Image 1 (cartoon, rainbow, N blue to C red):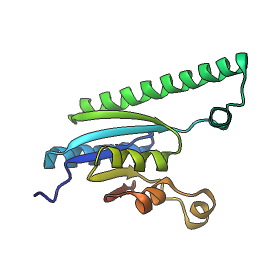
Image 2: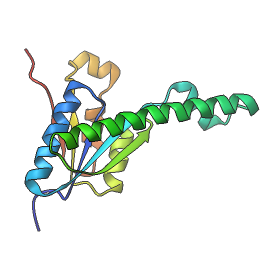
Image 3: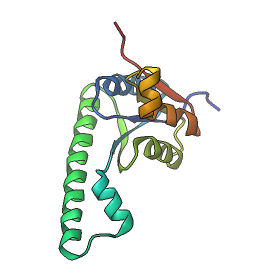
Length: 158
């Protein structure tokens, strides 16, 4: 039995911190022979998540909501595909890419469990205490709720 994870899940949103987390995860996966899984979670706008959960829209409005949701999903998929191309262009090997819609902390945690990830890697913007208390922090939530270790990668502060 190895102490190294067999599957590494890295979350990306395109931020500077996520790019660094992706590089870190790809490097760890390469050096340990682990599978690299990449996830991008797109938060649904309130009107889409609320309407979908309440089935509040009727007829024409429902079609508009479905169209908006599909457009959002298409843009998110393009973004994820581009992230995979960047990782592979830098020499990384992506075993699988995952697109999720919803709250990033919940979706990352759920996906990690579904694929039996041995490590989650995420970038963090390093919010200060007051901002983190008011806004919450996806990394904090994933660290608290994940079934496996979580590596939080930060950029250097000046």
